[in-house]
Image (cartoon, rainbow, N blue to C red; front, side):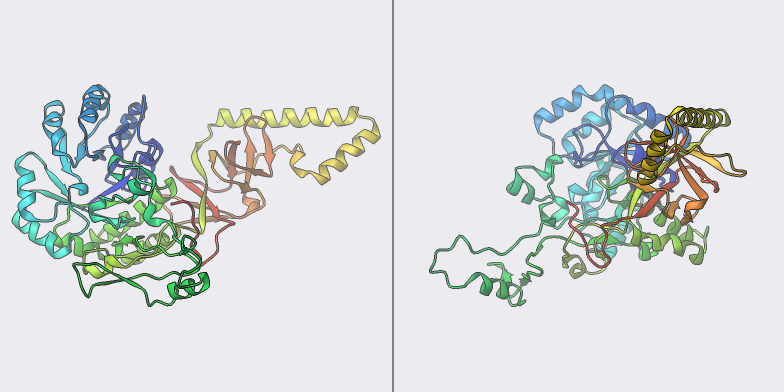
Length: 495
């Protein structure tokens, strides 16, 4: 089975490929349902081409999965030259109105039917096949038994199905809630994720003759006695329960099928799709890596024991409570949860390539030069002024001028800091090759490449390189424990 990972920008595309994806899906400009993802603009096609050359055989799928109005089709036509610049292997489409245009302009690019089209039966699959689709991204409301029936009926078409990530409570994600609450249409890529919001019971709009006090109303909401019954469906009750002052009646659990990949393969799934173009680099890397290892077990390339530590790391990527969705039982998909995706880790830095020997020497010499000038300045000071300066440095260690010294066997790497890293803390690395690597403070140093001096800490936008006693493979990430994380408590992080 193919492993298909999300890529909201070039950076995420790079990590998706590095951590084991066979293919990745992206969005271009304003024609994708994840407009809030970074998507791809300007001359980024050059970087994508470089990545495709770096990872030969990896595929690139482009999502054109919005519902197109006439003016949007006009805009698509005006941007065709831009689309031609990308090495696209397949377009993901829900609106068949753009199919003839794509077939004419991109005759060698495959057409994949988006899950937004809600294709869940073999007759529909046959129809889409006749108009040129080579793959169907099945609607999420389908079971494994239904997938097998479709594959048996239409064996010569590829079937793609989601295996991991956030799910939408609405049928195939076609939700009107965002448009109703915020004026942002989910079908144009502007979903506000209102289903994840927490709603509080409020009776302040009632007059003084209302039947329940606020406390009484709250007690009733938390009693578990309330439910919704739809007019035409007598006897079907949807429970409404408010806990900790808020309730989320529409927030679905996350999908997780990593323990059931063999069942998906036996059902006829050709491609496993991970949700998350709006998720972080860390999420893309960790989830892709886990599913890559699980698939390698299925293909006999790894033992279950070898893969298990990588799979366990899924718990350290942002997630809600999980479910198997509709694959086995519809009731599993009906269970809701509260709160946003969360993780005890935060991505602290992206580790780049090893610094060349020539650049290392420049940084080292720069540090020695700055330290020499600092010592010379101290010597020229009046004794009382020097004593005051030294006392100030004791109080404010961040102001100290300390060059790094060369250490046998140590290596220096470029480092893009994304969150605060304290040089006195233990840090941890993850990579495509190893599960995790913890490094003690005495085994690494953070250096400012512009001064050659050691740093006590670094954070987002600060220039730094990492000098370390370990060898770090390409695409290594540095993670630290999130200081605001509380075990067992899912925070509201805004999603």
